[in-house]
Length: 438
Figure 1 (spheres, one colour):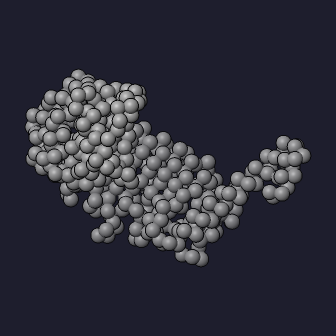
Figure 2 (cartoon, rainbow, N blue to C red):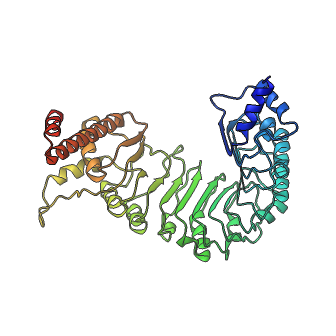
Figure 3 (cartoon, rainbow, N blue to C red):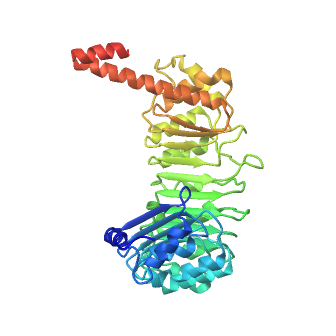
């Protein structure tokens, strides 16, 4: 138990606290320490001026003590649990949040147990919040019908994460200030109809998690909504994730010319469902020149793909800002490209494999096989197309040597560049160092 002098010192520093972030995965707070802090907070807040609170990987043991760190001035709450705590325990904390933090602007709770008690508690929390100040409601729980009626019509809401566990008729949506939308749904996508005619002029990011195995024509349905709301002109990040196999039509995404991030995740577990070919990749590259992240499918599998080196060149040519890429592609085409490059074009005598200044630094190849005898041609071709490539995410061990060779090439290139710069500078001492480096 701290002494009176120690508590006085603690109190002086505690008033300065504005933000608190705790990652409890490595060093959980001992329960006896929490008990002492609880005694201290009986008559006054522990950290009275705290605005932002973040708990990462909170366990069931600490959840009852979280209110200790939530004074009335707290506006932003982010709690992530890496366990499944008892629903009653979580509900008891959640339902009291508006009383503890009446000025709450942002609330993020995940993951939460799937339970009717949680649904009732999160809905009650929402209904008792100050709805005029609430800007972010990112809660991993379904809501009651009354809760849905409220959350989809909040005037100042900027970020929404909603879970639809049952076939649901949503109210007419009115979210004029919405920037980020994240929806998890467990059935068909009829709920999209509620967004038709909605004013979504500020929407920038959309994420959808499909838990239903019959996904159907979701991209086409979303395109219809976006075109009817003008959101197609403002959305810069689109993510769709499912653990099931899926073969979507990507042409429905070509209207979204402002995209910087396009992620469409699905499974190849029961056979490759990635039907991406050269035509699709070329169309995406031409339609979305601002792309920075392109990830289609899960980690690429061993199934042959129709995407060739020519489409990678198209991506490098049209999307100079591309920094992360995950698609199924053919390694054989990389080898053929290097061979063909050695043969001048009959018309111009120029190389058939132009080097582009694409920003790509990370390439995910998964299980795509790389024959040992083709390792060097693959390295050379990738570096010609993506000169800034450094990291390769792989499962097939053959890519380890490819990645090591690429990194070594980068180090050598940097060393030579440094030495040449020193030589051009004309500094005798630098000249000597440069000669030594070379």
